[in-house]
Length: 90
Image (tube, rainbow, N blue to C red; front, side, top):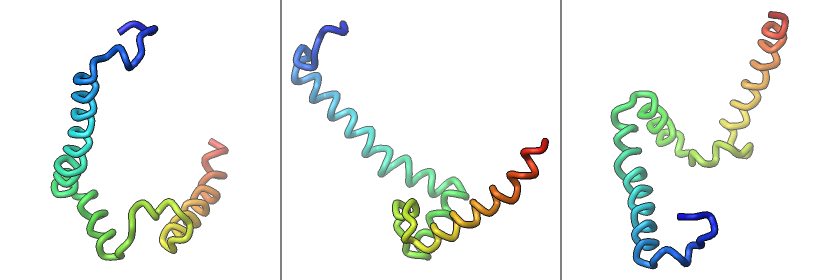
């Protein structure tokens, strides 16, 4: 495909096929690959179990209104502040 061509130059059937392929790949990842990794990779299995036990939304871990997220951020900042000075002199 040359740079001057547009999406309209590609036949509709080919564009729909590409869309179907992209959607299929996403669904395959979400419903087949990700559960496989969670079942067979111990750290991911432990994380999934902890999320279920605490009844948390993993996407919410990025926001500070989740108490565990705030505590983790404070501990990380303290660690960086404490160890940062020692590593800077090396």
